[in-house]
Image 1: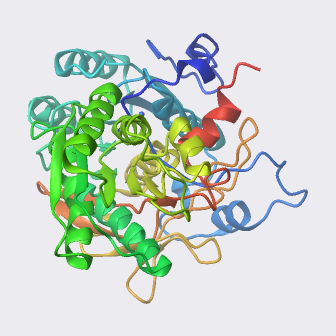
Image 2: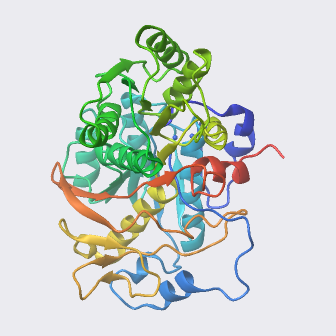
Image 3: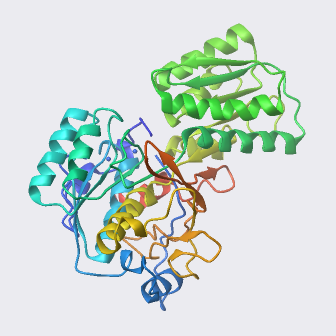
Amino acid sequence: MTEKKEEATVSRRSYLKYGAAAVVVVAAGAGGAYYYSTMPPPTSPTPSTTTVTATTTASAAATTKTSGFFWGDSPFEMEEDWYWTLNRSALAYANYVGDRMETIDPHMHPEEQISDITYMMQLGIDGLMGCPTDPDALVKTLDSVKSQGLPICVYDGTAKTASIDMAVRVDSFRLGALCGDALVKKIQAAGATLKGPVFSVTHGTVNPVQMDRIHGIEQEFSKAFPDLKIQEYYCESQTEEAKTAVFEACKSMGTPAAVIASNGTQLIGAVEGLQSAKLAVPTGQPGHVWVAGVDAMPDGIALCKQGLIDQMVDQPPLFYGSLAMYFLRLIKLQGESALPSIGQTVISDATKALGPQSDGTYNVVLPDINYKGVRPFQYPTWAPCPVVNDYGHRWLQVNATLVDASNCDTAPIYANVAKVWFSES
């Protein structure tokens, strides 16, 4: 998740009531990715829309337009543009299939989320989606929702209960390992010889998600460069603390071989620390310090274009809420048995029928629609991915998106989409 708020580029006031599918946002928006396009849709609708609505497989109804359902949506928070893009993408899908969705911001507080879910139950929702604010505190409430016969699909987080029908999120360690592997390959392709320590900037041990991320990056470094010393710094997701930590580390330990970070705010702070130490040298020039991290924030994109960040990786929020709703619809229309099974690999191929395939995989396709200048489901790089067991429920372990100087302006990341959906102009 992204902690930094990009208020300068996002109009919250215009977002609070944008209505189309009766979405109610009680407060305003967190990190991820996927190709977007501001081009108008093709004059002859293709591929995904035509193929999906034409299929007659068990899961076709999940994407076919029907008179809709009413979903309750309880995100982690709605105070950042990362979550705004997630929510609006889900709204785009709800609009397409004719559903309604009520989103209430719990402000990251479990007690508020429990109250919100109770309220939405009283409204008569057909199912619940969202991101549990605490994996333990929400268990009793989710169990209660499930006991009343309502399906539950979560995104970007989870809870320790089998009452969840499907969780849609990345694996944090795998996310970091993907970033670390990509950076290692860049270093090796450049034929660079690494000297000095690796400065590893993360939130702290109280944040297991970020610890998993940074350990994933560190694993790839340790495998490729076993002689390098990795020094961790805990910065509580604060840009200034990361800047100070890296600056002081440079002064005390010398020029690092690389700097890695577990989220966007710390990644930016790490680069600023190198700049303060006068060690920020663009890629390809003598003295360059290799830099990588999780999250591709607007400031990170700018630094990437300057050659000061070599590699980023981002989650797929455009698909998080939309896939959760897809599976909610599937359960309501076909039953829980229609979901992909634990152990199956889920693909997204618009040329194939939906649902189970002859090779044992399971196909899920969202319609290639144009919503307010963006085609959010145009490039489904979240798949292929496995369905694994997590606390007794299905976890769709979606893929992430690699971002570097070659694609940072066009990559399917929240920062690029937010510029279209939430700009002041």
